[in-house]
Amino acid sequence: MPTPAASGPLTSRLRLPRIGFGAASLGYMYTPVTDEEAEAVVETMWAAGIRLYDTAALYGGGLSEVRLGRALARHPRAEYILCTKVGGAGPSASAGRRTVRGTSGTSPMTSRCGRSRRA
Image 1 (tube, rainbow, N blue to C red):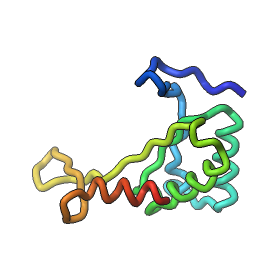
Image 2: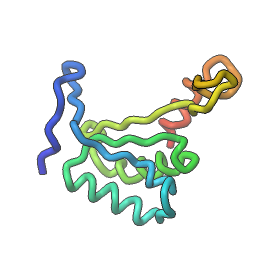
Image 3: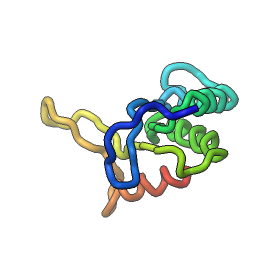
Image 4: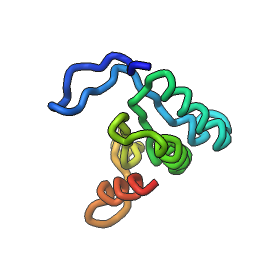
């Protein structure tokens, strides 16, 4: 099945699909989901031509990333785009401002990206 129409090129090699799958639900974001149900959802998205997948460590403490990674592992890596996010937004001491929480150290973002890529 052809993938949904893509937007203009972001680079000479990458085209961003106009529609994707947000995988928050794979990490119990809204309701409990079994491993089997999570896999079936991803396979259904794949069969429908979805090739853009979005997840984050925030979703189920990384469970969404792990489940999505397992399901996508059986597909050629060059055929999909995987998005994630790092850090966690939370209210700051200043009213109306948001900050990115991280761990102490020189590069919490780099550390989070490394953990995400291993999942």
